[in-house]
Every structure is written in C-alpha cells, then in structure tokens.
Length: 171
Image (tube, rainbow, N blue to C red; front, side, top):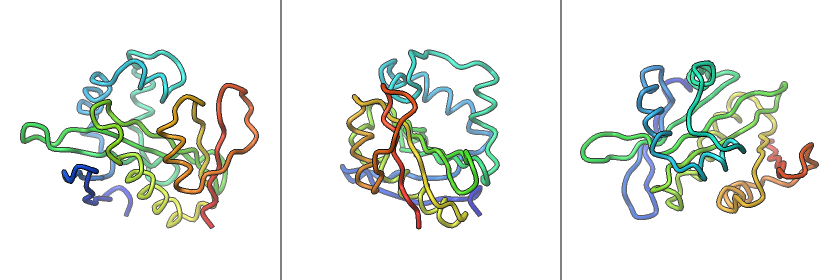
C-alpha cells in the first residue's frame, strides 16, 4: 500500500536515508524544510520566486490520497533526529498520465536523492497502472534534467517556451 511505503537508501557519501510516504503529521517538518531551502532552489521547483505558501497551497501539498496524488519524502539523520531533506510527488493529470516533481534541500543536492525518489515514484506509478510520467523543468535546472534523462524522459513539445516538457513511458 503506497501510504505505508517505506524504504532505506544511501546517499553518495554512504549515509543512510529513509524514503517514505508523506503523512499528515509531517506538515510542520515539511514547512521547516522549505524554510531551510534557498530562494533559487524554490524558484527552480516552482518556477517563480517563492518564500512562503498560502494555507490553500499547504493543504494541497498535504492532501495526499495515494491514488491520484502520491508524495514521498527523504529523511536523513540530523543531530539524532530524522529530518526531511527532499521530497517528490506525482499528480495524475489525465487517465494513465501523472506529472512528477521533486525538491531536494540545498545541503543535500548532488547526493542522489532525486534519483532515489524518481525510482520509487516510477515503481509506484507502474504498480498503479500509469503509462507515463511527465515533468516540467527550467532549462537551467541541469541537475534535474540529468535525473530525468537517466530515467529515460524524452523532450516533448512544450506549451511554454521557457520550460522544458519531458515525458517518460512506463510501459
């Protein structure tokens, strides 16, 4: 069952991280993680300068049904406490197709978290019967473009010229 999903992975430097389903009681920790994230990293994820979120946005991010909206978080041990250091989600946008997005906290970028999250989300999506994942990424976000490329995402026509539209077939 995706809402009880849990796995252990390792960062490139060997430290363990836990990948698990986002739960309602993670809201404060998720907001704290966003608060520790640079303005530039938030812009790469949300495509606009963002420092805070409305209650409506927070409710949307936390309202996960694990059918049409699946969210995983990555937790690392910081000072003896599990701390959210990344997250990924997909949202079904039409039957068989979901949009995927990721966020990795600044101090953990380049450690493989995006790849771990992508692999787990793709597996959940396949198990759910989805046939494709789509992603929108800014041209300058080379790290996420590399992650998507590694998983076989291919460029597709984009509605917005300043955004790269990518598609990965799951079948």
